[in-house]
Picture 1 (cartoon, rainbow, N blue to C red):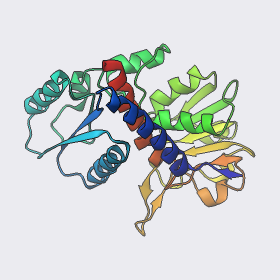
Picture 2: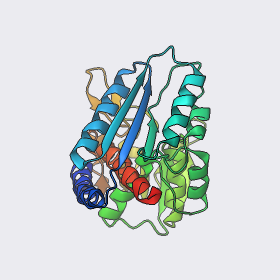
Picture 3: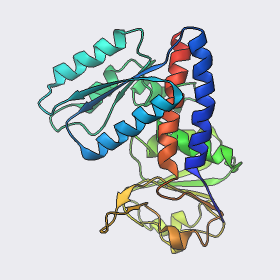
Picture 4: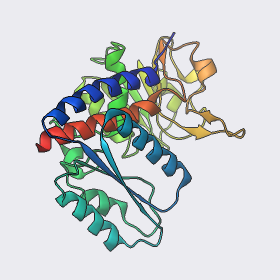
Length: 280
């Protein structure tokens, strides 16, 4: 069994991006990311801080717009439009969740698809589904990067994804299909889930339930990717996979923390640099 080290891979990617940004700066191009956060969600604050630190390390400029929960939909949309029009801003990210009463879908749709470094604008979602070059949602992109880095074959393999969110599950379906895997998706209404997961060569857990995937759900030699980030009763970070027991059967497995998480931020940085290149 080999542990897929997302932390080390993310560090390698950030190093490569730093060299690329240094070269861009010589040509007068300074990649810039604008992050909008509405409300005071604690987890979001941590994520935004991590993104800011990564930008700093790579040499990407970072602008933060912290809005309180009384912000109206109109104010949010106007801010996005303003950032769309600014030539010095290459990437725009709206941190979710946003307060109830605000329409996140409209907000994502307003972000210029050329600056949509989170890959949530319908144009990027559509381009991904027909296999065109686009901005891919950062977590699924990170998962694919891990599989590539560890030379894990996807072609003709049976991939099972547990979870069908717009952020991870759905874009990952397309990413894996584009790499010629045979993809099955399980969700809260799936019957006899164990019968399906036991057939998976590549099993991705992205449902947000601590230790949901147990040893008896995994076949010997499967590749197990754990996208879940949950806190248990002791306040410790755990994934959607029972790592201790499942790792006895898996050929490759990602840990939590230190697996998919760092890759999400690394792929965001990748998208910002890509956006700066495309816009110039």
